[in-house]
Length: 187
Image 1 (tube, rainbow, N blue to C red):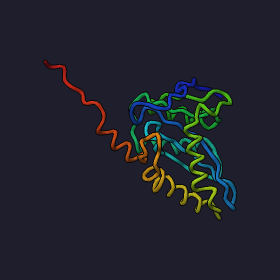
Image 2: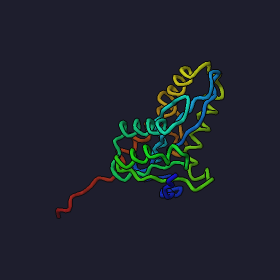
Image 3: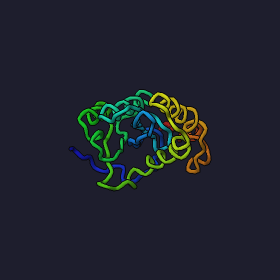
Image 4: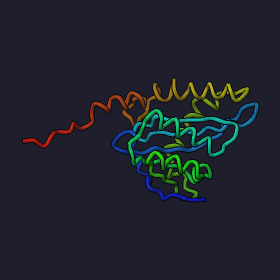
């Protein structure tokens, strides 16, 4: 499988939104079998910008999460899209999706979970704060609950010490006002 360079190289604090996204897959236990969750997270604000869930994990799962992120954010060319070396992220369909959107693919070094630690931390928060406290009867129940966690709680209410104890959406809005103003060169 084709492997991309580790372009991100643990630079987990970009200067603005839509500069670097991280992506990964985790699994959720339900009484009707495993449910797989693919997530895309903006490193600037830690906001979940794309996600997808399915009972299996083909390349389409990660493509669907990335397509949602692209549709919601419309990132500028050059955004770094970082993931591990999973076959879904090395697939032709995922690489083509990134190329069509002028995104730069980055992959963790072999066997090094620290290269994608922000994404791993999100999954730990999701599981500790929600998933491990539930007994999902089926996939539909898990999908509803996890979507509510992401949209209703994590992005809009959950406080992050790294963000000055603001939720991701609030942090992004606050930072919009702090971006430098471009001054013309006329003197």
